[in-house]
Amino acid sequence: MSQPRLSAEADRLIETAQLIIVTGPGGVGKTTLSAALAARAAQLHERRTLVVTVDPARRLADALGLDEFDDEAVLVPVGVGDGRFWARMVDMERSWDALVRDLAPDQETAEQLLANRLYRTLTQRFVQSHDYIALDQLVGLADDDRYDLVVIDTPPSVHALDVLDAPERMLDFFASRLLRWLTAPYRSRLVMTAAKPFLAVAERLLGGPFLAEIADFFWLFSALQPQFVVRATDVRDRLDDPDTRYVVVHTPEAGPAQQARELSAELAERGHDIALRLVNRVLATPLRDIDDDELASVSDVDARAALGSVRDQARRQAALVADSGLGGSGNGAVQTVSWHAEAVGDLKGLVALLDGSDSA
Image (cartoon, rainbow, N blue to C red):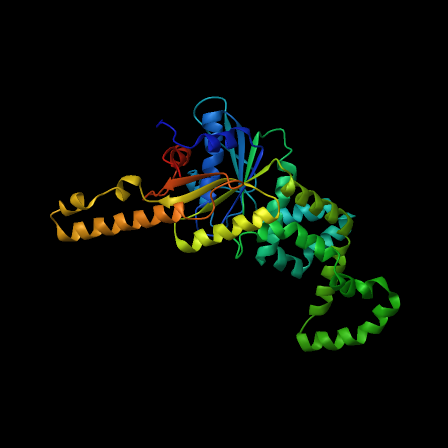
């Protein structure tokens, strides 16, 4: 194995942390680097680690060389030492169904809610439901004695902090006037009787029992309120726990770097320090260090132009990392992860990603 070059601060993080949440803009390699951190902790520090992803593209399965991958934790051979490495992809539909069955006051309420078409649409298609269920998983997993370290790969969101705000949004929903208004007909026989003519007309206009299904969904969902409030509060508290560590991933381009900068500021407002920042897909240092004499010595004109372009890009990347505004107190170690032309296809390749890292 090559000599590790990850910084002492970064290695200390994966050697001692119990829960790591990896966040950042979409399309920057969060899934792969989440797995790389967990794999490194298992192989080099002999820890029992689990990486959890909700990535719908199943990139984690590809990175681990797995043909099949679902919401059951899969043990991936580490190859050396006593470390263990599991990987799991959250199945949205099955996870929501299991949560409903766990929190519903009785089996009849659970089955009625599971059969509701609006429930199916919300849990399968809406990003906000993905955000919440991803974090709901950490409540049980973080306290699971089978694992020393759990790494949560957050789902892609329009806004990087949407996933962290999901528990608060869930609590706001249960406390909202909208929910009380939508379920009011079910709470009063008189109101329900008065509303029937309106519902009948509306259903004829909209086609089918559309409004009734919406009302049924909110009524059934409100039956989960007491248990759901407790659960969402537990999730929120776990996010705020000082032992929960945050890693931010981005690439060395202006857009992702700006998003990471904003993410850093918003995390700070919530009282969360960034334990580690990984700048992914950075061109190798030797390319940046090519001087003009070396460039002029390349005889082929096209090759010289191409090499010069790559050198300039590497220098722009280095300047962006140095001037990102994310260094300093509360923002952890800064690591660059070298760009790899080929996709990672096994655990050895995941560990090697961080072996080739540099501290910035």
